[in-house]
Image (tube, rainbow, N blue to C red; front, side, top):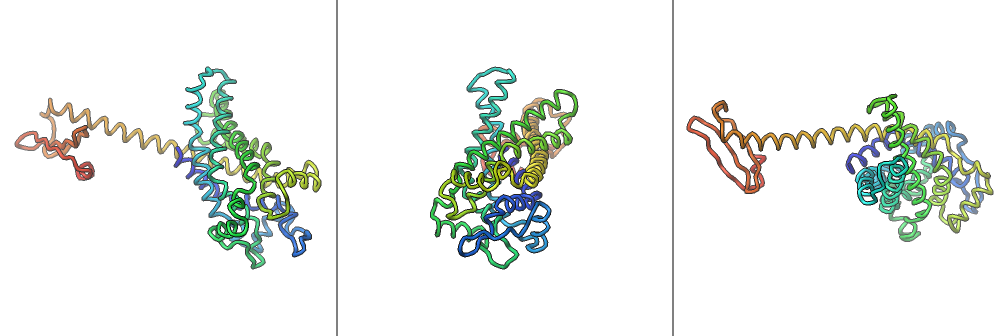
Length: 354
């Protein structure tokens, strides 16, 4: 499950990363360009399409995919935990709390499970998130780079800001990722269940697509204010004294709507990301389950056949090897013209050899 979650998230990130960079540029549009005296320079790009097309024209693919390496590092850590461990944690809470099978109990279990995995995941992935935001925010079209690559970014932040620099915005990031995880996983889980139980869709691609898109909208609506504050604060060096100071400055700057700056690209990115991730995740789960089931069935079949063949070998073709894995080693049976031979070996390579 963890491998499937991490792989699905990386695939979704690769497909939607330019939208995420566009969202970040819009969210920090009043602070991304400052002169030496700290005076705000008018934003170079305006609006979603203007920002996207401007980056494509002036910065190329390097701009649209700026920060992709720490972005994938983040997903390998965060998604493997928050998505891959969601079902096991949900099962754990269900068995431990014994709240029954009611709708309210199931919803509560889903919420605390998603909140738990989201919180634990970001505790490990926080430094990668800071580096990703910093690298997404830098303009690659003017020839000057704040960070040349992710390794340089980690070293530079540690050198100039200390270990705390990599944990900047940790509190709003925990809140944001907990809410995102609850909105995405709980909404997806619930909507998928409703669509299947109502008979509108079967458990297939269309159902996964619809549930993923709905989960993306819910997540964007709930987390956009937190995401804007988190992005502004993470990208700043000494502009804000605290998260609360950043929040107040944002409110003074544009009022309530300032907290939903970049909402359209945020939804386009998160909605598309959720569709890509959940569709890929469901397919990877099916593949993993199928492979595990086949391996389990093959082992059981071999063991049963090897036991039965000891009693009836009249129809067994000659020179056909059969392997039975036992506690005392690998029993290698071979029926030939002379009779039934049973050889035992205890080496690690015997299974591959036979």
